[in-house]
Length: 355
Image 1 (cartoon, helix red, strand yellow):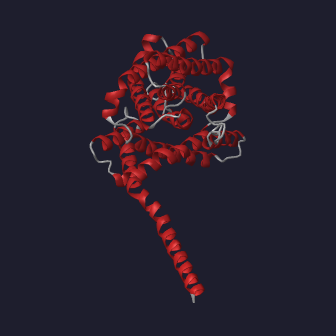
Image 2 (spheres, rainbow, N blue to C red; image 1 turned 180 degrees about the vertical axis):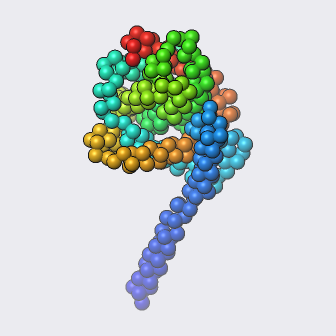
Image 3 (cartoon, rainbow, N blue to C red; image 1 turned 45 degrees about the vertical axis):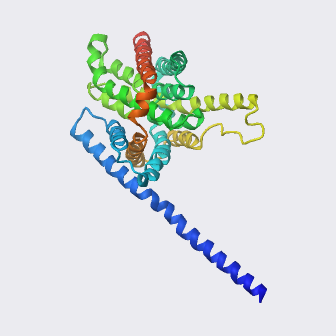
């Protein structure tokens, strides 16, 4: 009898566990739905606003809407699992799909002078921004994320570097806010500077591609000058190719530093390259084969744009005015300095090398 009772008890326990598991797993998925529904609505509004206002980029609108939700007290606890999922998972998928817009022959089309402008601009901006951040007293993780976003491709680059930077959510939010702010200003200001700076449409496109942060912001800026868009996109996407080696280099340096300090001697060593960055490289390799149909690439580009805007809504909910007011002063100076640096170096390269 005792054995049977124990068996019944074990069976009941197993049934209870099974029931709990079966209700918990869907529950986790259900927890995402309210936040994802809000993200979907804000994504639609962002594209609608960009369509209605040609000077407005959907990515910028998305960040602003997310920040409004957070600072107006509308980002309730029930929404946070979904918005966090968008900010993390959807952004990583968008980064991988971004690789499908790149192909190695594009690098060859740039020529040595074009590649030199891209590489020097990225290297000087990344290194210079971190040095300026150190001089201003900006936390190293925050300065690293700002440097990555300004030197490569805005929010996507910040997301790629986030795990390696070992910062907190505030560091990410500030970096996203800064690249969004300066990239939005670039859409308005850079076309006004084309005449005074003596740039023809092709040279202006190269300057925009080498200096504006987000891919969407680059397109929006170059599209305001007829004949500039093609050069801007080619230079910009070539810049994006440097995202993977930059993240890998920083991750390797961090891993070696921690190992030297004995921090990971008895623990798990952090990955050299985040998995989604590997996916990004694999997507570039796949596109470079020429095997992917043009229709598939076009569809993937649309999906990537939608996912990126959705992710930026989620990231925007992490932008709190109180945090920016408390810690963003020096970071704002850093962002503006980095913006001037990337624009100045890119302009010098375009004028000197004639790309």
